[in-house]
Image (tube, rainbow, N blue to C red):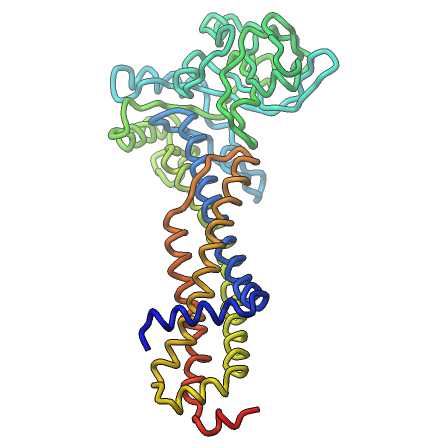
Length: 407
């Protein structure tokens, strides 16, 4: 029998009992669809995180203080008070005209902010004019913090778009309005362009004030919480990072680098950590979804075993008329492969549509994983062969006389 005839007969056999065929492929459809949707959403999340990190600035190095200790208890990194404005000035002076483009000292803390009857709890960031260049902040309306504001400790504020919405409402112009931070009145002088961020460090949900105002009038701090350093290009990042480390060790009178009371992170470090986290979650969820593929494969094997039992007399008649074992194996194996491939194709379509809908619903970029689609088709075909082999082999091993006697 030609393989074209075997395929035609297999399709005819499968369409005789449509309900059974549909139920047999359901597990494969769910498994393939889930894997494709989760892998695509994982890649969408990774791309969104990468874009958000890149939007914070290019060729960026961030210096944070070391952990603060209390007795035998050591806090999280960044909780110390070892960085000062003088450290940032030393970096500016030492690296001026070299591989460093800008240095931005910052003091950041969360605080309750009110405007009339509205209030919000958000991040208040004390900055200098260099912040806008280092962090690639653009203005929607108004102006950013100036050097005069820093020198004079003026009480002015620049709001992110989300902060504007929370305090004044959607579509309002807050320029010239007043807000209160820790019982201090600030005049709004600008609104930044939206970066579309989310989460704890949402760039759209921040309030920027002059660094000196934040330190001396709002939070009573002598230290700064971070220093952002923009290198001239990506190729000198490591060189600049080492130079910053040596300078701060000297300023802090530390001879052993392992005792450094600060840490230096690059964008690649942050991006790598974020990608690893999203990749791990994607792999975990995809692994859970892939379990349904095994369940679907077992379901197909059970259906094929039932089919072998129902068609025992037919198998006996074929073998009595001279059908070879390989023909019988091919017949049932092709039926199993068709079931899984059809289920895989349907699951692929459902998975792609589901990932697009979910990505749009939660404002993620739409990413379709071609690798996951190809893998899904290959896996579905492999499942057909793997779980279809035993029923096919069982059918081919039937003795013609015993099979013809089967009731």
